Image (cartoon, rainbow, N blue to C red):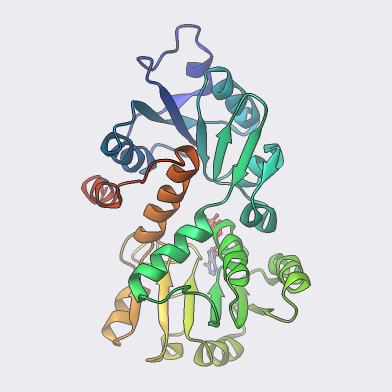
Length: 302
Ligand code: ATR
């Protein structure tokens, strides 16, 4: 279990972080498992920036208070994770296109006047896919099936697919009612690009995957080794690239590799969303990707 601070800790009058010049945090609940501090600290050290990046655990009623306190303490920004990404979007005084479209923010940049909100998850996913496939831009013209489109990560990736100009996007979710507004919102900007499918409609799902060249797995299935596959294994075919946003090896990734498909895990997305956030906090510095990748590997937990 890694160290984290609570709102109560931040409110202590003698709260100090050995006075580094730059202070950063990741806010969420739970937060002890977050690998962002190791990854960002590696990039900060490598860039020669005197900074500290901490975990902050916020209870449901504390999120806005935590952000306000971090600003008082002169933090330069923060990452925001589950379950506060939507509230961070509401709190921000301005947001980028990805955040506006998905209604969720994972990176905040503070100044005296305002709070800028960004969502780097989609760009991070895209960068990881580009690195793995050597195709740029990696989502343009693709026929995509997105499993778990109703989840926080899934809906953000759906927006990224549309923003980058995918050819078609089949949004799949167990609870289909959740994804109708997302599909409508995407289709308002990109007419007829997306449609909705229920996970339970396996015949239609198999058909959609057979016509697709990219499968994105954004459900929580695969977090546990005993989880069932998120789709019938017969749906996989040799022209399919399979991306699972879960950061460890999953049964779906293993099966895809066994069948000779290009299979990409979520580690790259985690690293690149962090690299994009780093550039927002330090526009004149480049994050050291090798150091960030190394920090993620060495801090891998069982
Ligand atoms: P995150 O924010 O990390 O994406 P989430 O918002 O809890 O996590 O989303 C989890 C996703 O996994 C959702 O799409 C969820 O489907 P529902 O919206 O119907 O809940 C999906 N999911 C979770 N368990 C599932 C299961 N057993 N079968 C199919 N989909 C599942």
